[in-house]
Length: 258
Length: 301
Image (tube, rainbow over all chains, first blue to last red; front, side, top):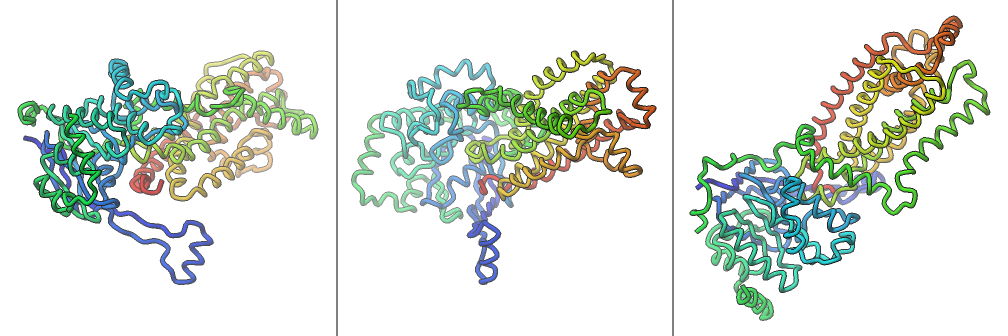
């Protein structure tokens, strides 16, 4: 088996700026306050994902999951360490793909497909499937700026799953979609997983992660907290100790429907 | 399960950094995407406007009439210069091409931040697309100029055509390097957008547009060669060489020369080629700086 994703001591540093204008900075400097602060959003993270593996990436809000996905899909370059991937990458980051708010859904669809590396011919072949999967009806002609987060996720997911990718990134797709769409997403992601493509799945829903993934990686404030069996990862995060009965039900429902 | 369907490692593409292949070369490898961006930009620039594309002609035409009216009619300047209107308009096209590329290119990355922050693609794509959109707008303006030249008794020549191509290439290269440099800088401080506005004001007066080159040679004397170090001035002169000079009859040219006036500097084509090479070097430097700044772009948007 070959590796699909290799991360070695990846560090991504962010700079928090408290002041932006010249006046603010001068005043803050004069008072001896800090004007900016650096912190590592991703701190010395190393792991290897084999081809065909499905990884559940978990962690609390702000633990660096989306940043790590951005490093993997190439939007961000690590400040130190190396990130290597094999083949085409497609997927969603932070519940949606990059959409231009002023453009219509159709225009964004075409643009997005091209950015993900689809050729004109490939898109022509798959266009109807994508539209059908997104199932947005006439909304597709409206500017994406007017879409709800759920509608954006539908469109983004529809394009991303139709790209012939080797690595698929799914970041909280289930967080905003309605139930029928969630079911459709889960089914599609299973298909992706079972076709031998590499899957990186970010979710706060332990049930979905447990069903979808064999391995769990937990990020804690940018550091690798846990890497191993998915059930242990959920236990590590204490996500299995649910106080909220409703959430448990939702998870079970997703499972039942598929 | 999955192991059975995955291809053996030998057939697979190699492990590589996911962000690799960025840069201007990668932009031209993804021509389909570039074409989409250009088409989109053209339709988006005048979205929701009634006159649409016509605005890109109203703007330069109105400027042309202002300069022509103030310089030519009110101030009665340059009466000794034949076909001064064509002189102005040829220069205006060049200036407008540069300013559009520079100003819109500087805003291009911030304006497309939704895409830049989430999708992996060569970010040079946006300044390049802006440059091509500006180039697209040059076309119809050239047609207006061409019609005007034909009325003025224009006789085209191959050297002139070469000058036109050279001039456009110079502006494309220098405009793109400015756009690259400032589009990245604009992400960090939006002040750069304003700096560009100030700089574009200077451009109009740094090139022989509302004054002829003859005056430069006359007033600057030995310093005239330094004036020609400005690639924008070279590009303007080249385009004027292509159109304006062709509308002046040989007798008239001889007459002006007898007056001791110089219509065009010596070695114009050689200068132009050198200017283009210089601009390409600057473009290389801009690309280098852009790559350095690029790492921090997604987090600062």
